[in-house]
Image (cartoon, rainbow, N blue to C red; front, side):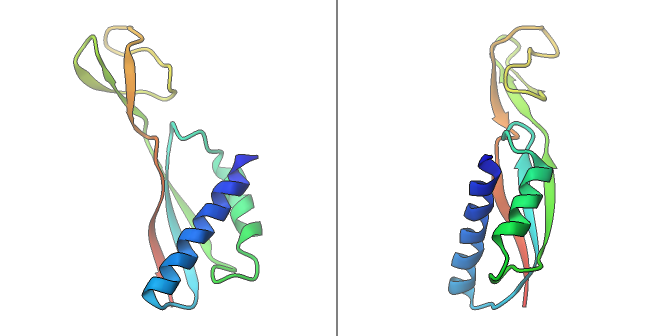
Length: 113
């Protein structure tokens, strides 16, 4: 389950930020997860809770902000919504769609003490 390594990466970002900004406790983590990132939100929540035990983020709430997938259709020359990487263009039905959005996994904001 790659969500465990993703949760460990999120904790590393939090700890690095704590060292840089001098906070000692995290209350809430807002995590932006794209629809095309290949991440199971429930599995990530479970792994996050396990990974942050006895850390600066122990007990922190994880809020996942899901961002929609989008791609650039080379045939239509338009940005279009997609829900999976290999979806056809909703306008022309072609498969020359390059994903351009919804790929992210990033810590958007932290609520800290």
